[in-house]
Image (cartoon, rainbow over all chains, first blue to last red; front, side, top):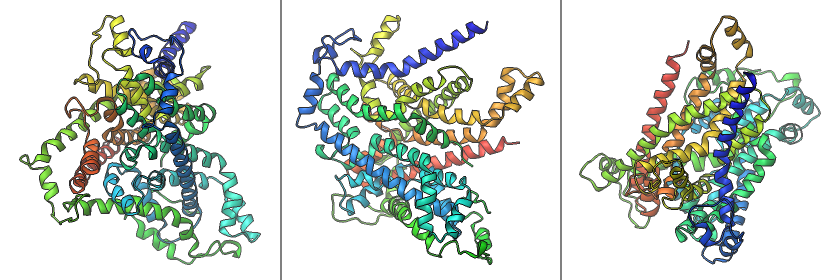
Length: 274
Length: 323
């Protein structure tokens, strides 16, 4: 009885697992096929022959500078994550530990924007970014999305859980609020900071709508916007499209495999409100 | 020590401030910080927050009152004309806008129940202890880290009517093998909803799972002692324990579904015709391709208002059943 229940459970889990994994495996396999093999029918799970043609051809095509997209994505995601963590940590510390008039108002306003649908920001932010001269530059995908309400909420919760005595001791030794923040609070908060940085990195690396519209020349695009360009240029060249998709996936999948604890932890925390 | 409750803007803030104004005795005679210090810490965040969150919300309203064409020099004030056009069946924009709202509505109604229930089932299974649990959790979550562009490009291929894996396996199982997943409705809706479930199931599951693990085991034990069946335990212990998280997940899932863009943009290109072109897709095209920003801003206000009404309704629904 007990063993058969276990068998049923594992069968279900494995079947479900295959549903989630096999499209990714098939993406990788197709990227290693030749042009004809990729559009052959019936679709096969083994490339015949194995070929790196698709990668060679998208890496050398002038209209689709994949390496440039990769570099753009990397710069944008790292810069955005750094900006998110620094600004959110400073703000969260003030909101968690300092007493000042208007604190509840500021915090309430930030939390309220967690529930503002992003669609309302698209048109006016395009104008603001245009006024700043940032259209078609990486600044457009680094800076406007850096004010993370989730980041402030998440880090404030974490700071509130740190025993105040440690900061009190540093204060008695004559440390300034900034020194206390940098030398006492930040080192204790490494896991939370890493989690927030990773979530920001992923969100920026994967962002789609905004880059599609604000980065219009091919050499300025990030990978997701580039994939869209690649798709419009090669509608049914699935070998090329899957190679592009693999290039866009590998960095985040590697991050996920090694740091999944932080990522899953961060996501699961986002539900524990109030 | 004072705890800071989460407050809505304008809600009970004045009383909290009144408390702040009272004389404070610095602990152990050491001043905690100067008056400007909290604002210095807040300023980098508030600069970004003000410029790219608060200002746009206000500016959007201002733009929506103008015939604001990015490519033309004059931006005449037109009052509520942009809104009137959206509600005037005789105007050209009426058809375009409401067909996109309809697409958003169809997608939201079809996807949200699945995105609430399926992840809960997965989380309930994952909440039991068994070897390999973390591995399965990671596998189910993996698509979410990929982002919509990769997901949509891959599924555009799998859903290809002629050479895609989906139709191939459907044929092997004796099902219709020529479904035009990306160029006909309702198949396109099935495809868009299915891809979205595949992509985001793990996200909601992880949130549910964390909440399930917070429900005290003693409650289940007490229910079992009282002779409650598994179903009764679910209804009387699990669901009440999940209520706050359920409310939160419902809200974020509706907002996410109502902002669906990438799947439609890359898998169906909004087609057939404009049937799967969602409201946010239409807003982006109207405002950022055709540069009719006044009209697009009015559309985003109408969509946002609709979503806020919906959110209030959901909060009310989850409140009412309390106690």
